[in-house]
Structure formats: C-alpha cells, structure tokens
Image 1 (tube, rainbow, N blue to C red):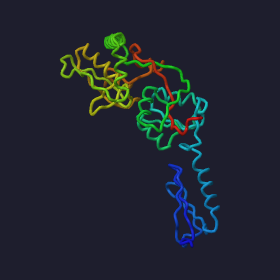
Image 2 (cartoon, one colour):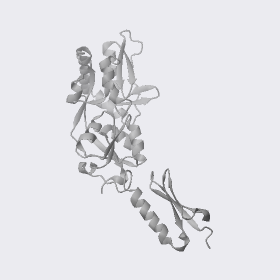
Image 3 (spheres, rainbow, N blue to C red):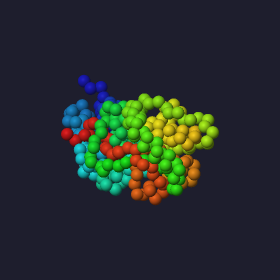
Image 4 (cartoon, rainbow, N blue to C red):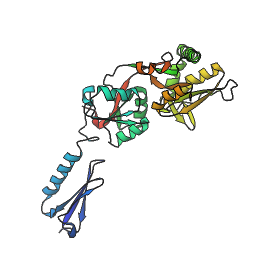
Amino acid sequence: MYKYACLVAIYSSDDCRLTILPLVKKHLNQKRILKDGVCIIVKKCFKTAAVILATVTMLMAAGCSGAGSDSIQIGTKDDLKDKIIGVQLGTTGDDLASKDTGAKTVERYSQYVDAITSLKQKKIDCIIMDKDTADTYVKANTDLSVLDVGFEPEQYAMAVKKGDSELQKAINDVIAEMKADGSLAQSLESHKDQKGVAPDYNTGATGGKLIVGTEAGFPPYEYLSGDNVIGTDPDVMAKVAKKLGKELVFENMAFDGLIPALQSGKINAIAAGMTINDERKVNVDFSDTYVDASQVVVLRKTSVKK
C-alpha cells in the first residue's frame, strides 16, 4: 500500500512552512540540520499519522514563535516591548525604537523600502516610521497596515549650515508664501501616490548652484522619478533656488550622512523631511516648520491585535 518506508519533514523558518517528502530506506534513523530549517526523518511513519502530526506541532511551536509569526500581535505602544522593530538609520523612528519601546532588537536600514521588504518577509515584526510615508507604502502593499500608538507629534523643517542666515531666510520666505497661497498643501496632495511631476530646477541659472542633500526614499516628501528627485521638498527648494537665481541640484545619500555632508560643505542645505530636535539644533540651523508630522507603526495585517 505504501511505496516508501519513511518520510522527511522539512521545515522552513523563513515562512513557517512544513514540507513532507518521501525518502528511501537507507535514510532511516538519520537526523540532519538543513540550512533553511530542520530536517527530521520519521521512521515507519506509514503506521500512524500521529507521528507526522506531532512533528508538525513541534516544528511550528519551535519555529513560528519569533519574528514574522502569526503570534505577533500589536495594538498599543506597550505591545512593542520585546519585538523586533525596523527603522531607518538616524531617524526619529530609530530614536524612539531604541529608547522608548523596550524592543528586543532594533534593525536599522538605510532606506525604508528595505525595511518594508524585511517586514513582508517576516524578518522583523514592525517598523516605526513617519505617517505620511507609511501611508504611501501601505497603499502600495495591501498586506500591511498603519497603526497609531500615540507617539508625540513632531515638525519638519529644512536645515542649513550654522550661520547661513541668507539661505535660511530665503527658505522661510518661500515656506510662508507656499502656505499662504495653498501651493504647499497642493504639493503634498499631488505627490502622495508618487505620481507628481518634477519642479523647475532652474537649469543653467547664472547665479551658481544650490546643492541640496536628501534621501530620496521618503514619499511624498522626496522620491525618484527616473533620474529626478521629486516631491514636496524639491517643490519648496525649487522656488528657493529660483528666488536666489541658482540652479537646483540634489545629492541623494543616506539619511544619517546628511548632517555631516552639510557641515563639510558638500551640500548647502538639507531637504529630507527632517524632524526638528535639540540634538540636531547643535549642528544645523533649521528653517521655519512646514509640516506637522507624527510617527506610526507599520505592521502586517495579520499582526494587528483584534
């Protein structure tokens, strides 16, 4: 009735999947550890289905209790305790995860898109990130959800080198104008699905170049469209460049490298949805605020506590 004398149960810890495969008799009484999980030989398993059931139960209990398992349930800030949390390196989310959550581990990524990929692959339990950007990514990934757990509100501003009052004033003037005429709100709306258009970079301007540092993985504030950095921050800085008679040029780099680049003179300003805080004020001068923001938790829909 049975062609094989034994079965092998192969468990993959990446997706909590158990595969039952037949083996030949010479493999009886063996036990092996595989790279992607556990391999257990079940001897004479044709005699009882209970042996296979016990194997499945053991593997699922042992392997599916960590990051990415269905047992992860998050509904409040307190539920972040002992979780594996993803963040973008050097951001407010990084600071919150490290100091305020009691996380088991904080996994740091250069770009949010890499954190999103790890979350979908069940390598981390959740991500702490900015709400507007979270909404954009979740809209494109319907298996994910956004959860507000009550982090303190924050505000974004552009940053210039300490003492650069001329550029700071030009930015402040543009922000005030865009708030007053409604173009700032229009810009945010137009870029929320990453389908906005590039601003006028004032290419060929005779007044030199305004070099702005950013991390172009932060929609709707900055993202790539072909080779162009576009978004609300570029819209603001394009008007600043035109006011100063300069050509707008972007330097795309890791978020945690922006302030060092500004201090070294590699860039003239930072436009990257940067939150104002006391630590950063020591190293840069901020413009007036242009957006009220907040941090939220992004998680798999299966991890949302009912």
